[in-house]
Length: 377
Image (cartoon, rainbow, N blue to C red; front, side, top):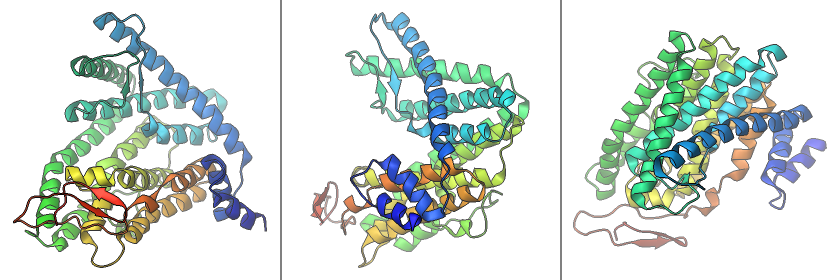
């Protein structure tokens, strides 16, 4: 009876997503751990303190170089959620005397993740996530980004020096795999364009992007996991970074087991699809950006591609929630529920023609109340 009531509460839009997430996790798993709510607050406070101190150092560096007296700095930090979940996981498994080790590795992980994201922003000339607090022109905004990233890079290098070589090797392995995926981006764009124009069949998209097998499958995935669509490309895109982050904890002697790694990586890949790729659908279509969401629209025949997108996204998140429950990580399970409750697949158009002919230039198209520029007739 209580679980049914929890499911009812989780499905009510009038309640905050955080409340719905707790209720949804209990309703789906029968697990209610009130200590996880207290643990979340503690972890949030610790990590936010790390970020406040980091950004204060960036502010001082920017003020010194550019001469601003009232500069403030912040950066979109949603990508550090897995580090928070890992710290909470360790708080529950370590003696209090060992918490400092977990916090130090979390600081390194958080700063390494932000450093990598800032590098991508600089490479792509995308600075909207840099909140500087003063009016600056584009050249100055880029310079602020360069100052922040350079400071982060130096801090990461200094922290890595305090650990064994295996920690650095794990970090460098993730960077190399992620960079290799970045080099594939242009070929994926070309593939998407070729399918849109009818120069190549959609079956090639399925073979080269959706259903690509691993040459050497990561040990954390089960055989059933490896049947998930897009696992190889999305592991290389985002999953590997968090797998390596967790590997750094392990190499530093902290108790991170494979099942927890699996829960985190599946959750992150799921969140990328369920949140970012769904929200960015129209922008990605205009930019020719291949993602699991744009791919499902290209692969759709006469059916509603939203159903396929929901099946893909929920497939990852359902597995992540089950894995979190199996390793007694209610905090991670609640986070997965929060992701599920925060997604907006209903805002995707029910069907959109995103293919165009070779004879005419794209001119725009409206379907299902959604306008997608850059599509053909």
